[in-house]
Length: 70
Image 1 (cartoon, rainbow, N blue to C red):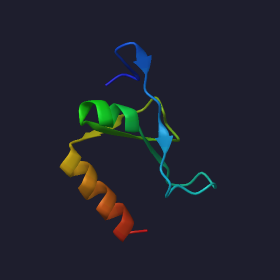
Image 2: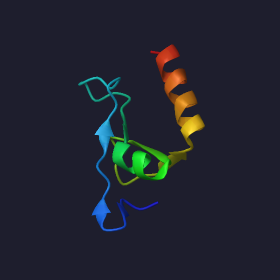
Image 3: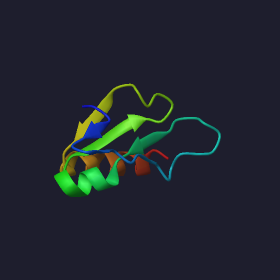
Image 4: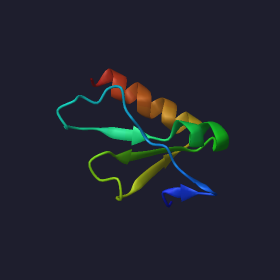
């Protein structure tokens, strides 16, 4: 998956669970998820690195896991 889908690049948003100290941070692209149903996640420290693609159900499980381990 590239950083550009169609005409506009993705707008990445940092997780609200990410602290300001630069630790374990992820970003996701909410507008892309709303438009496609595909939830993409990346490491904010490595924006050019791999992207994890999740279904709606996978995203819900990912969020539930993160909440239970915070």
